[in-house]
Structure formats: C-alpha cells, structure tokens
Length: 265
Image 1 (cartoon, rainbow, N blue to C red):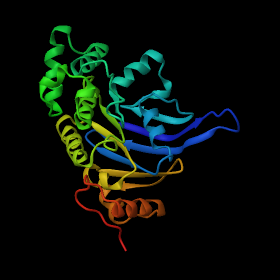
Image 2: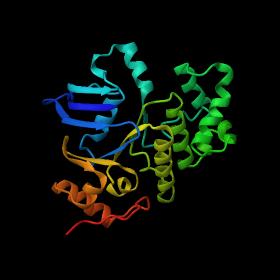
Image 3: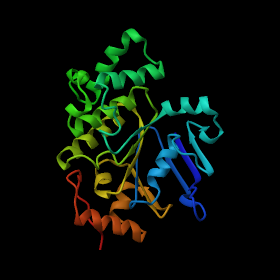
C-alpha cells in the first residue's frame, strides 16, 4: 500500500549548505499492518512522516500510496491524496481548534471531503465518536473540556472521517499520561483489525512498539539502519543503535509496554 523508495529530504538553511534530514530511506506499509518507525530525537523520522502525508516535499526518491507517486501529483491531486493518508499528531490539544466543538471539528473534515451528505453528517459524527469509544455527548464540548486521552481520540476520529487508507501517527501517546497511553495504543490496534487501515507509527520508545507493531524500522541520523519483524528486532537486534534504544526502554519502562521486553545478552 505505502511504498517509500530511496527517499531523501533536505532543509535549506540561511547559512551553510542544506541539512539532510532523511537520507535514502526505503520502507513499506501494507494494508492492515502497523509498522513502527523508531529513533532518537532529530533522526528524521517525523520529517519522513510529514513527507508521506504531503506536508513536506522530498528531494529524491519516490513515495507511493496504492501505486500513485506523490511527487508526480499536481496541487489538486495532492489535496486528494491527503484524504488517503491522514496524520495524528503528538499534541492532542494543539492539533484541534480550541474554538471549535468536537462535533464541528469532525464535521468540518466530512464537509471538506464531501464524502457524506450534509443531512447525514451528524449521524456520521456520532458513529465516528463511538468508533473511538467516546460518548456522543462530547460532541458539544471544546478541547479544553476534555482530557488528553479524549482529545487524542477525537483527533483519531477526525482523521478517520475521510476514510483514509493509511494513518501516520507521530508520537501520538508521548504527551499523554502513562495510564492513558495503553488505552490509546489498544484503540489503534482495534482500528487496524476492524478497518484494515495501515499505520506508520512514529516513536522514540521501543517499549511502545512492543505492544502494537507488526514490523519495526530503526532510524539513526537520517538513515534506516535496521528493520524486520517486531519480535526479531526486540529480541535479536543487529545494530548498535537498536541495542541502545532497547536498553533505554528497559531502563525506563513505559506502562504501555506489554509484553515486557528485554535486552539480549
């Protein structure tokens, strides 16, 4: 479904040469699969995620979704592409308009996509809220009236409103209380199983991926240094950076971790 091939992304700087954030990365995500992309802060994983949904332009390589090359699309076609790949951001409060109610935020996504007639939008908003395990009564509330976990569920519901083929989740549980993280992760797994949606899950925490990922790819300094089935990466890592990330996850375990992971001798 998603095919990233030899992608390089650079940022222009006012002084000095360009900064290479992503350097020749190749990665795939199949329908109904959760692929975890893990790495330290500044390794380029969020830049790659934003390129996938069209928020950043990449300089080299191809990003294809359902065999459509993103770099070959014009402006109007690119907007249509964004409906097929939706992003869930790290800060659930910052990603929602504080002046809009929950129902208005989700309804706006439906209106932009024109996927549901105006007369049926209220019913569809209710369905989406129930899909993410929120009581439909929250539709009249503003983000400040909700918890962080509730806001992130609203953000997920809004992303699902346009029926995307792919969810790109950029550190979606980092800003949440530890007690809430596991519930949001379980929701993403449930949605994967129920809807068949693919998911590219960005994180710095391998303990999180131990709970949800089918495959794991490890980034370091802009490059992909290791990838494979989750169990293989978690129990028999081959790259020193993966070992360091495993050691960090073991030293500072997350409550989202289930089952526990350990660093092989």
